[in-house]
Length: 458
Image 1 (cartoon, rainbow, N blue to C red):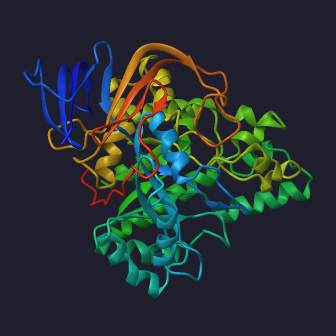
Image 2: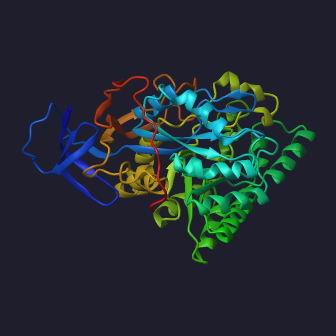
Image 3: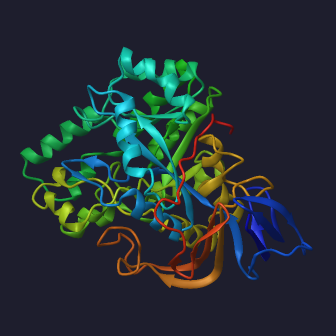
């Protein structure tokens, strides 16, 4: 069993910050302390580096069928890019096809990920057709470590379920101790606004944004919280973007309800002004859309207030040629953008170095909270004895810039092209193996493991 010693790094977790050594044997951490009196097979001098737990991105879409095409990152390319950005574990979404079983969908996604993923991965199950047969499958999914179930309140005719199905799903998931997540936007209202804009010949990317005003997200977030409160299920809102939606979560806390909230890095650093570019605006067409500056301020505050627990990506990349499917009609632009590789460095640079959030909060929202909410803690999400040796060494002073020319995502553009960042990931260790060092990938296709998850422990 190979051993690895990391010496003299500044080791930061959600609740500690100290300069110490870390001893790894095999895949796990076996000792922490100052000047550990041990010899190891390999030693890394981490002087001047910050060491944080491997990032967990609980919202990615790899090889996802959507709008007549597939997202462009495979489980191999996507998890490799994630590793380069300090994210050692991702949770991908399995999409049930209407009229088909959860098992069929899981088998399809396993066929794509097993033996190809470079980094560790798990699955959420997106339920798009809740019926008696689906209900009977929930218990088995949870037993197999798929303990979270996604619902779409939009994309009618493809992914959306109605409130009656939502209640039934929540009741069944609650019975077996799982968690329900929601894409919380009002699909009927959005579809109506899209149709109105198209009839009026308003077809540029700006009208993607104007078809999803803040009220569509606020209303659905409140409705989801209300139904979850009635059923008593653990509830989580994915990719929350705006003040109105977060205020619905604040309202829920007044009745002693807990609703977990995820935002995404793009909603913290990009805004809706990008949609005014009639060509390049397509690069940031996603749902929900980018919002206003006041919403960014709300989300940063929400992180510090503990109302927003997770910063993910909703990584769903498409090549520019795919985006051009909607060059004459915004409603045909595949929704999504590439971010899996840049989440942690962007959040460190824009959040920690600017003083918006603390280093501890950075660790919480990039790793620890997701591990707890999605049943991977303390195996993942922390630096402690017995935990997987998923470790990220970050040079806090190093400046660099983002470019599609150098990123590892299978996407030929970047929404962050030319962004200057402070703080660069130097080395990434996954389950005791150096996975990335000096910009080079050190582990191969198939090194990533499926992570069987337990229940929420937050």
